[in-house]
Image: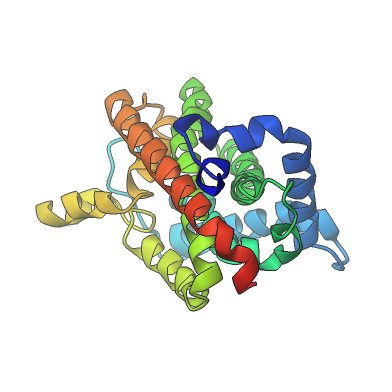
Amino acid sequence: MQANKYAAGFADIFRPLTQNLNLVLQLTKRGILGRYRGSVLGMAWSLLTPLLMLVVYTVVFSVVFQAKWDHPGAQNANFGVILFSGMIVHALFSEPMVLSAQAVIQNAQYVKKVVFPLPVLGWVTVLVASFQALLSFIILLIFMLFSGMSLHLSLLWTPIVMLPLCILALGVSWLLSSTTVYIRDLGQLVGIAATVLLFISPVFYPVERLPDLWQKLIYLNPISFIVDQVRQVAIYGGTPDWQGLGLYALIALAIAWLGLIWFQKLRPGFADVL
């Protein structure tokens, strides 16, 4: 009976969202507002933070270092804009990682409630990060306009390009949130792992600068391919690599399913540990 109760079919990846949409939205809203509760400017920080970071990147790399990005489509692109686009992708993946490490532990009051759908916590972490990524992307587009860069119609592909990364982040969230209940040290390692992912991805440098072997290895980093694709459609005016995105999406769905299976397998013991 217990095994059937916590079974995880492939369709169950999306069921926590579709069957509990109001709950997910309420928890997401609480997660977003909770970041800035008690601050003077409140939600304004969600816009000010990416704006300030974008200005800093532009001044330091474009003005001070006069850095150039070695890519055929980047001749007229601001280095700070290229860098910031990669940071948005990294944050979209790393924030759910960090948030999920404590998601179940910090919501222990829900664990013993049989009727509470715990898998929604994974969706909440991804949606909170997606909201901040959306605001950051809006700031990026406005900055591009004011700096004289062209906005291409291809940037409309950006949500589709980033969707597989969200699915992958969902699976990783389920894996981490359930495992950290039993191995608390994992929560400390997640922040380090997120930083490592940043520096071994093409956020600060183009892949073309790396030796051939490293160019292949860097795409083992889950954010590397999406960083390139977001720049391709939002900055360079190109089209997505549909074959690559299709393969990435299949892998992301498989990991999300495995993450949910693992979450449901460990779930019966949460109440005993917490």
